Each structure stands twice: as structure tokens, then as C-alpha cells.
Length: 332
Image (cartoon, rainbow, N blue to C red):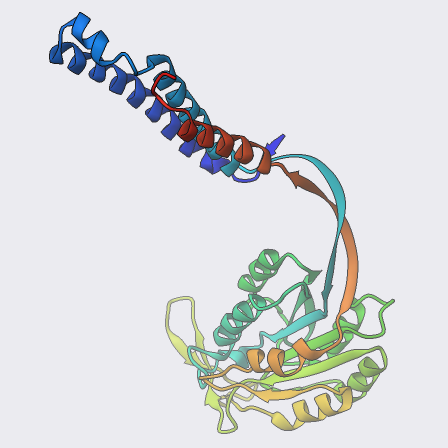
């Protein structure tokens, strides 16, 4: 036997209090009666009252409430096997962690805003598997596809601009890593969401996007930043902030390159959304595209489904309380 709601055991303490109250009430009644009249006269006045029935009624009431409170615990015994089935997509989120993501044209900066938006996005997933790729000059699978959203968020929290030692931004490496990370058996149900400012510095992302489409991978892009761009500050070990500079000593101004991202999603049959301070774009992508896609049925697992038995103590309790109301205290 098991109880589905064991915390209701506190209500059984109420029954103990009722027992103590009934004992106290019988004693107080006896004291009041003794003060009211002499023993012989009292016996004559109470000739039609059956004290045994009074005690029986009290016992029936206590037992009835006890069984009703026991039913609140939802006792269960006996079970049958039930297969739980889950439907969803395989979604890999690729997050740009290059130093250009420290630009604060999107508050507080591009990277932190993206991490917050991904955390909110994860809460809306229902059965979808989610994975995480961090990328800069190369790509790294930070979290393989999983339904453990807590583990995914922990991996997300641990990435920053120091996660990938190689500088730059290589969208090509992201697509390659994603193609290796998806199950090879499925020809659809795969979505790659790339969050970046679009400053691709190497490779051929358009050719790889076409290859990904052939493997059933839909690539969607969230462009983060502004076309006007913003200077990038780097915080030094002593707390000072300095501008990011290129190899020639020039101050770097990071701009959103929408053109390359739009070409990628066009080649891969995906969707492009530009992020803003008010709407990052992941919610819009999920509601407008992902939630309407055909979902894969994942292999279900067998669970024990216990039989509810609360009806038995509840019926007994109600019968006892009904009997208590029917029984008269008066002698026949």
C-alpha cells in the first residue's frame, strides 16, 4: 500500500483531538448532572436516555471521521503497467560566445540577454529535447540533446566569452557540430537555432546550410545587435574596462550582419528574427514556427500506475456517520 497524499496525515490528529473532546464532554456532563439533582431523582429524569447509545454515537462519529480523513491520504494498492509517450522536436541552441557578444547595444549586453532569453524559452518546452552549442572561432557541444532542462540550464549558466579559447566567429563550425550531434536515423524533427551577431569570419556557411537541409535540419537564426553597432568593452583583471582592439590596434565596433543570417535560413528553409531590447525573438519563433511543426514520438517508458482505493475508506466513513445520525439516544 502507498499513499498519494501523505501530508494529509495531519488531519488524523484532528480525530485524536475529537476523542479527547468527547471524553471531556462526557465527564463534564456527568458533573453537571450530579450538581443538578440527587442520584435517585436524576435516574428518574434520565430514564428515557440510553447512555450506551450516547457512547455508541460518539464512537461512530469518531470512526466515521477517521475513515474520511484516511481517504484524504489517497491509499493505493495494486498497479498496472502504463506506457508514457512523449512527442517533441530535437532543438539545438547555438550561442555565440565571441567577444563581440559583450557589446551592450542590447542590454545588459548581447550575451547575458541571450542567456536570459534561452532560460525563459526552455520553460515553454513540452517534451522537446534540447541541446547547447557554444561557439566562437570553433564550436563546442556544451550539452547534448536531453529532456533534463535543469542540466541544460546549468550548462548554459557556465558558458561565457572564455569558454572557447579560439577567437572570431565561425558559423560554419556550428553547423558542422550540430550535424554530428543529431541522431543519424531521423530525417526530420531537427531544429538548429543560431543566436549570433552574424559576423562570420571563416568557412562556407551557405554550403553547409544546404547540406544540413538535406539531412532534415531546419536552421533558424536570431540576429542580436544593431546595424549601427557598438564598441566592445573588455573588463581587465584589475576591474578596469578597455575597448576591444584588433591586431592593428584599432578599436573594434561590432555590428549586426543580417545579410549572412538571412541567406543561411533561406538555404536551410528556416526563419530569421532580429532581436530587440523588448522582444528577443525566441518566443516569437516558438509560437510562430516550432509549435506548429510535426513532432517526433520518442520511445515511451513503462510506469507503474497504481489503483486508487480511497473510495473504500470514504464509503465506510460516510456509512458510519450516517448511522450516527440515525441512532437515537432515547430508549425504545
